[in-house]
Image 1 (spheres, rainbow, N blue to C red):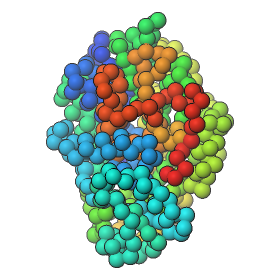
Image 2: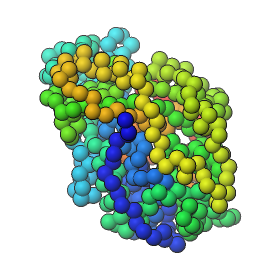
Image 3: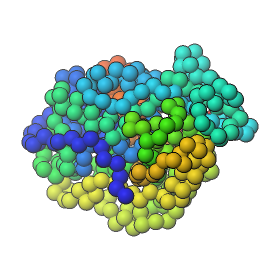
Image 4: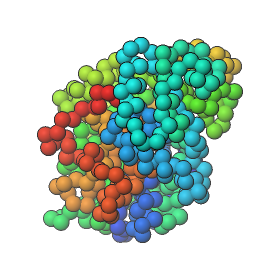
Length: 442
């Protein structure tokens, strides 16, 4: 069963000889960065090796949430909420955004305590966040038969449609002057003593002053060839969608399953906690850096040996601008979904909402999530390479925060006052002696 089909975006025909900024990657982060920079008058080339939103930007759950985020991301997500509210009007297209609310259910002392601890992070922010239980929770989730000791309700959180959003933002960037090239991999960057001077694409060289690497799961491979050490691994998440059926408008996230209504009347469903980690050569190269994260999240990670080992072991790690790169050999990373995760999430969802017995699974897919050792993204310049910037490692949190991540990246490139303090997202935190690990209360 093929992956989801994002709204098609027709590419421009001619590769420019020179631009101010080249953005690598046509997901929601890259598209949002291109839009922000184009609106500020910069000339921008957005290069995508496959098609716009072909990978995780169209494969995620579609959640636009502040709830249960790492506290380091909260200011940026608050900015994202503000952007999402006017985004359809701004881009002149539908993204499917709606503020529907999200309920985070928990049972047991450990789960309930986690909700209570997290709630302290948003005190004074006027989010409307509160703990609910009993009849109040039942009213938010009509038809729900699952039992939770308590839940966190985030009324300002919501959803959008992953297959619509990044294409809509990319098209809006083109409306503002950006050039969109698909099926056009950037192979490498060109530098001199002053920093970035251009990029080499599979269709030729483009002169530029700035490069933004927003390549998702591919970012580490590209960065390594450029001499940049970017600690990032991939985690596989499996998702299904159903046929239309009457059900709750408010989304629910709990360990057994997560569910949210779709614009087509169906539901997007996934496991609320389980992700698959393929053991690959980078698992050993980065083992020491990721050990605290693995130790903290071991309950939700399923490690396996699969064909990904052979695929990544055979990938070139260094190449010349004239070489055919791994990005051209795999235009769209379309992994097989986990049948076990599908069965478990679907069974749990039907038990929680018996009305789903009348629905059918219309489609299932998987996506590769780009993760960092502390589960916080990199939105940063590269200290030793002026003009080089990276926006990646969103660790499964990228869709909702994407428009604000694009704004922050544009602020950094343009050297204007950043919309939020970027210190938590600096690349140098992995090498400057900082304590790098996920927030223990997240």
